[in-house]
Amino acid sequence: MADLSITSITKRFGETPVLKGVSLDVVNGEFVSLVGPSGCGKSTLLRIIAGLEAPTTGNIALGGVDVTGTRAADRNLSMVFQSYALYPHLSVGENIAVPLRMRELNGLQRLPVVGSVMPGARAHNARIASQVSRAADMLEIAALLDRKPGQLSGGQRQRVALGRALVRNPAAFLLDEPLSNLDAKLRVQTRAEIAELHRNLAATFIYVTHDQVEAMTMSDRIAVMMDGEILQCAAPDIIYEDPDDIRVAEFIGSPKINILPLERSGTDLHLFGRSLDWHVTSATPEIMQLGLRPEALHLTQHTPRLTGRVVHFENLGSEVFAQIALDDDAMRVTLRATPAQRQMLGLGAEVGLGFDTRVGLVFDARGKRLRSVEAMVDLTSEVA
Image 1 (cartoon, helix red, strand yellow):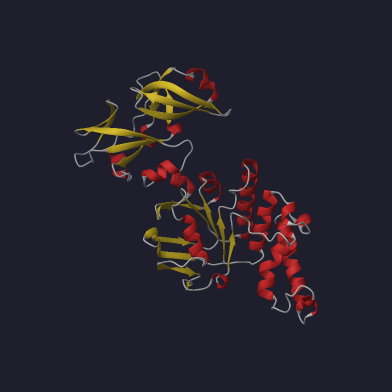
Image 2 (cartoon, rainbow, N blue to C red):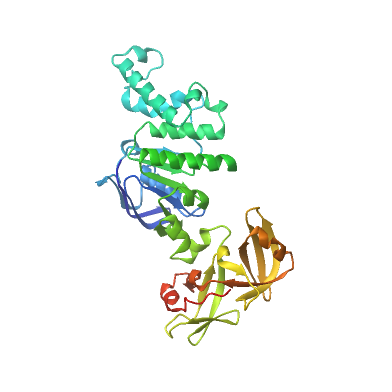
């Protein structure tokens, strides 16, 4: 296992820039997810780490050694693809054994009939069989070793792909949206298995996904990518609660964060004409935006910050999400409520909303976080 260092990686396809100076350090044993919308460059970055693509500029170092110009086969990295990439004519055991046979057997020893009688082949094959068996036991697929991939479910095929990566004992595991072909139930089960595998191996995992739930539940850190750049890389709770950029705040979290326009009058801040009792300096930007997670809002009849009308709700059993059209219906916010409040959220119902000022996130007109403004406002005020 080894540390991974990505320094100022750029990538262009013709005149189109895909990566714009990406830098990232991953310590040995860490689980880091690259998350972002389609086309943000996360899979391209993973392929550059693997050696399947060459960067336009920049460097990749593995264990302190520059491997930028090193072939993929010589980097000792294992990659798990979205499509599983299993050989349909080989059994599960044979598929798992492929990287070991390529590494430990010479050309003659790999021949289908005479290879097994070549000098040294028997000892090599015994070691390979032992490693395959150990990986299969770890992934609970020992009973499937004689089956062909076509006889397996999607979740079983994914475990075979993981087993093939596992037997190489690589410096790091690279996983490119490995769960995207699974149904919802299998995704939940398999992401738990991948997280457990990471804990058991204490290995380095670089995981690419567009699914924020996968990133939030499995990762030590999340690198949020957009437009070929890493906007923020931090622990999941920091990404959710303390985003640096409005694009990070909007991408992470379901339902999406509510973004509302703030108005400044002198040193006072207003929201839809109502004073927030927040006081700022004259140097504060004129145009700002307030981010409120759905759980930050609460129903109130006492001096509400916001008023509106329920236009849609979703009852998920343990919680209720309601969309509230504010004032003149020009904007909507999402409220996370409890089942006990369901009767107050009938379609068309007029409701008042309050929020704790301590959980408001303030962004400037460009979407950059204004922590200085949050530090200056009256954080002792909480509306009931």
